[in-house]
Structures are given as C-alpha cells and as structure tokens.
Image 1 (cartoon, rainbow, N blue to C red):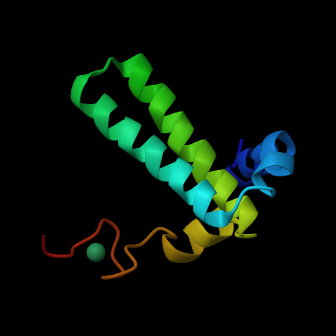
Image 2 (cartoon, rainbow, N blue to C red):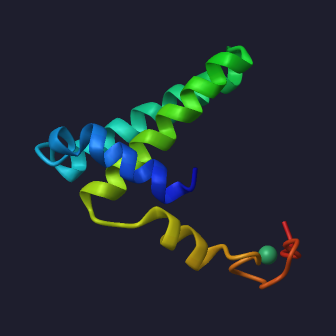
Image 3 (cartoon, rainbow, N blue to C red):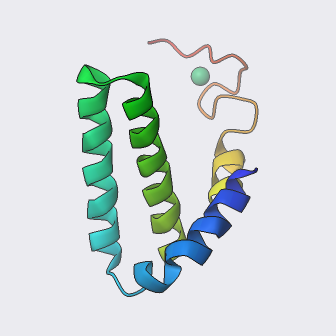
Length: 95
Ligand SMILES: [Zn+2]
C-alpha cells in the first residue's frame, strides 16, 4: 500500500465526518494523538507504540484530506531521496 492508498482509504472511512469538523478541530485531534504518542514513547510496549503511530498517521491523513493535500506528492516533493537542506543522501547537515 502506498501513502496515497492509505489517504484515500481514510477519505472513504472518515471524510463524511472530517469535512463537517473545522480544520482547527481536526488539527487539535492530530495534536492530541501526537501527545499520546509522546506518552507511549516514555512508558508503553511496542504494541502500544504501533497503535499510537497508527493514530498519528491516520489523523495526519484526515487533516490532509480536509485541506486537499496529497500527502504522497507533498512528502516526495520535499523528501525525494535527498535531504531538502543539503541535497545529500544521507544527510550531511551539521547537527
Ligand atoms: Zn541535510
């Protein structure tokens, strides 16, 4: 499955709900899920981590759907086998 396929699946599953919510509210849901991922990184099992990563990815896709951004195009336009800052693979930017 490609990123676009996942985003389209999220559209089929949730767009009817996501489109009725404000962009800000969808963004806030994403932030809540990122916070839960942060907690999971501190204390949880790998299984819990996987669930939280899935939630963050799902809400990121939902937010992208609401604002009509194709995540696959956006990601590969910026990160296409090279660092967007130094242009190298692997990245050679100073820390
Ligand atoms: Zn770099």
